[in-house]
Amino acid sequence: MNINCLSQLKQLENQNNITQLKKLGVQSCSLFADFLANFKSLKELVLDFKSNNLDEEGVEILGQAISQCKNITSLNIDLHQFIIKLYFQYWITFKELLGHKNNKSQFIVRDMESSNLGLEISSIKQLTNLILNLSGNKIGHQGISQMTTELSKCSLLNTLYLQLLSNKIGDQGVIKLAKNLAKFPCLSSIYLDLRWNNITDQGSVALGQDLANCKNLQIINLELRWNDIGDKGFSMLGQGCVKCQFLINLSLDLSSNKIGYLSNSSITFDLAECQNLKQLNLNLSVNKIGDQAISVLCKGIAQCIGLQKLILDLSTNNIENLGAQYLGQELLNCQSLNFLTIYLQWNNIIDAGAYVLIEKILQNQKIKHLALDLKGLKVIKILHLKSGQD
Image 1 (cartoon, rainbow, N blue to C red):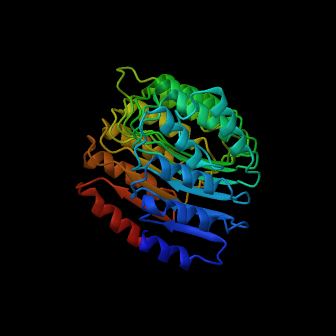
Image 2: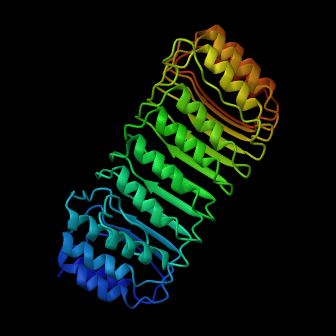
Image 3: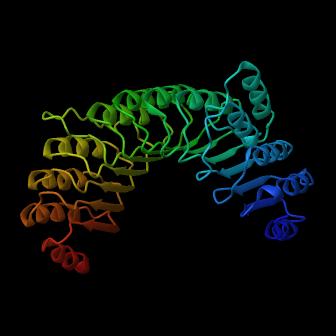
């Protein structure tokens, strides 16, 4: 019996929320299951299993216990260090663990198991907030397709947070995931961590096209770092996101991809359709973006007349003085902008280009918060002096 677990459980008695249950040993699973059965009115459940060593039996017991909590509205399970093996029974067990919440991936192998899992998830009528960390496992395209198909039956779900870093999703998995996103009737906020999943333009284009069909989205946060996405994939992804007419917060991380690798850049980025957008966080660091692409990118950002907060990471690219001038000129046209952070270190900008950039930025009197990283350029001193005069 895990004494630490028992102590934690006793401290949770008479509470409506259970959070951060750690160091749960296999022998304590039955204890936890019996304990959880007493929480008939439980609304929020956060389970941190990333440091545990659960076997198939333990996971199954936990899944059955969680599935009995019919009134949960917010469910968070962290399994990102729990490596699920590709054995049939293991996948079924994993499905049960996610219980009423959602399930891993390649778990659904037969029609019967798929049906049972679907019924289990769809029975959670009150679920509105779902957070699932499955990073570092071996989920493939079939698994992600089955999982999101079943999760879309949670009719009240408005916030979906899926961490799938370092799996085996690939383009086919992203295509299937994207199609299922449009099936969530009430989804307003989505966070997808798809870093390091061998995604190319094909997957990114599909994601953009199908996100455009998620009409109620207000917040989109996509982590796509360490993939193989190029100009077309970035452009079509952005084009799809901005078609969400209620979008107010957009965050795209495409660092360490292949944007700008083509000699003649084909990047497009037009935010003219996204007039409700207030906050944009765009990370394009460690690519090969040059001056021409910067011009297109900045013109697109300037089209968003209501943009108030901009965080732009263009570090470690191929930007020269001309690109810095383009950036400064277009930022001058962002008349609603009051919060600006720009990272430009490790480019080919020298003092003259940086000086023009800063002069233009300081002409925009609406900007109240400014952070500019040019790493080592003497012109930074000018920025501090001019800012101090205001």
